[in-house]
Image (cartoon, rainbow over all chains, first blue to last red):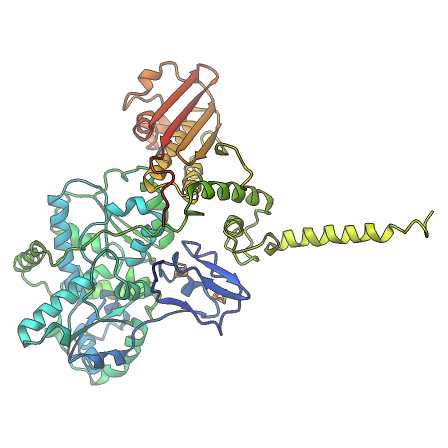
Length: 444
Length: 152
Ligand code: SF4
Ligand code: SF4
């Protein structure tokens, strides 16, 4: 069986087994067993919903540390656009990037810049390739993993254009190899991540893609360090390459806006955010609905987009305002020149998402279809017998999931507290009955 | 379950007329069951589309009905049975864009007359029986060409 890397893990010492997390998980990947939450690895998509839900902070995201920078001769920071929205209005973007250099980075290459390249590639792909519609953005890895697990038949809708993070890493490495004469291996590119899903995407890329990102560091960690460094930091506005369009990718709707820009309403776009909303949209597509002729779907697992990521320090509504302000006030370099450059990269294949994104079939009850059908029958019978309250006390997210766990051999019917009580009652009645029976020698 | 000789598993779901809020739920349940039964993705997808169209037909055109999914290793059948006006001219109803949906429903964006044609596209076999004034029964059959292939 394939081994999966996961950023999202459990801190056992903090977990109280309260079952709060099991219901929010979009792939029903969590069970509470022996008083502790367990994540079923094949199902987890690293969306981080459970990190948000857990009242005891027992769900954590494993990310790379800043120490990892030491492995490389030359270090590039790749800040996600959402990072810019974390600061007060009086802190200029140039100083934010300047502060990153104080943390041990040699330069900053904006993921927002990568996002602009990706926007051009998506425009071109939409214009040149007819065929599957709507196409789905590849930018949110939690959405792609969700599709691998729950919507395998829609995977061929994912646009074969790389994510802004990968685009930025590739472009940064190429630029620095040329500029400084370094070998690619000497350059370390570190993404400042708003979410665990991106960490997993770096450790275990989907498709046949190799990653150009060498580490993903939590935005919360970097934020703390940058705050400390800000007083000393220089204003490095010279490091700012992107325009408001790339920066806007940090919140929902921004991606579509950047792609739409070059296209003048020839295509129609839809933006959906929040994993549960994404699920209901994908369910609709799966029924054969083309969403009223929509060409492109920007889908993000977090509410509000990346500014709503589980590792983002600030309130998402506040950061949205901040990010929009920066996006609106930033200068606009020559539109035409940039477009030609990005187009060249796309034609060269540098912005392609390579390889097939394969399904992760985890739903089937048994590899042998006859046995699976038999187990399904047993499952249906078991569900009918359960109370249908979906209380979660058994440690499974709902009664149907418990029934599934029972037929898979991972749980018992008496794990249900109501079933257990019934059994105890039956037993008690039997005992009373037995107690009343006297041996013939003593009775009449 | 080894002593079970029944040729197929049948699941049954009631469908209420004009319940647009819950419409689609039966199709989702059927889809999930087929996934758990280990059906290949292509079969699941076609069955899910057919089930959704069938469910919508019951919701829009009838006084309510029932859906059944019959699952065997090499065959999936989706059956939709409703009580309602019936279809006077089945051939006409099979034409794309032909609709008898009332105006309010068309205005809601449903009932574009693609139900039966879409079901036919997904089906390896399609049987329709209808009696005017009584109801309609539609059976979509989808064959699974790789029933015994072991899947990881
Ligand atoms: S929410 Fe989940 S991880 Fe957190 S304490 Fe409760 S059971 Fe444990
Ligand atoms: S990260 Fe998401 S998919 Fe994984 S266990 Fe948590 S809620 Fe479930």
